[in-house]
Length: 317
Image (cartoon, rainbow, N blue to C red; front, side, top):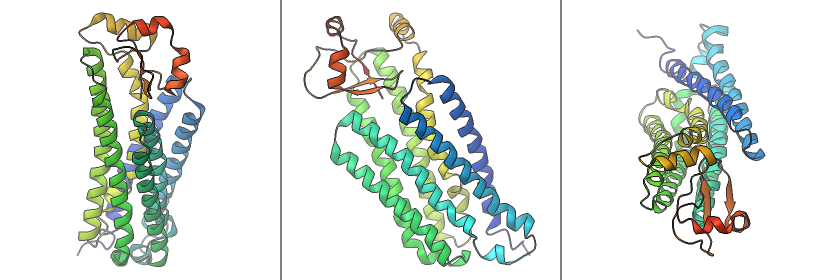
């Protein structure tokens, strides 16, 4: 006869292992970010700090709700059958962390596309996800018995479907806009392809994990879905941190055009698009500096010499 802890605490423990491993990656990436990008905007530094704090709190709660039944109350059947308030914090913490990351990418989509309908859709889906996650935490408090979790599956479906829609929309919007900026220059295409690959990879990971979590939750009445649910918050934070920290790799990359590589190292800015400066609305993107400015701000900073050089306009993400 198998252990009565296997259906619930087994998946929790495995999920906790992944959670703590990814938390270590978050800490490392946060240290690299603050060490490397000291001139980033204040609000971005605050966002990174808030994510680290939330992930630390999330990991502490996860450790506690696994430690108590396995150590403190070892041998008791109650903790094997009923979820504690510590466990109920998991969905709420996950959606709050996910929302902070998704709002950052929604801001990035807004900078790149200036499409308020698209941005509003992303924000709406993200808010729906938060409502679903908070509703799941409340439902766990009302129905704490693990085998009865399917009773509030509708709330979980809202949570996961909204999260998948948000992540997928962000990924498609960023890839579409970046593809539109490819202009035939080898350096431009190489760097934009790197950004596109990173965008697709980070968005794809969270989407696959969320879909797997939902399928297992709906088809299996044990806790196997927790293997994918517990590390989810760290995947979101790592997707943002990898996007921010990847700027160092882009700065020192080289292409077949040697003079372009030297320009990126010397000026820390590679100018991409060709043609004369347009007066219509456009977004200038500086991959290295991660400074996003509107065209109105950029027109004051561009010198007449800059407009005479056909491939030296700033593009940024």
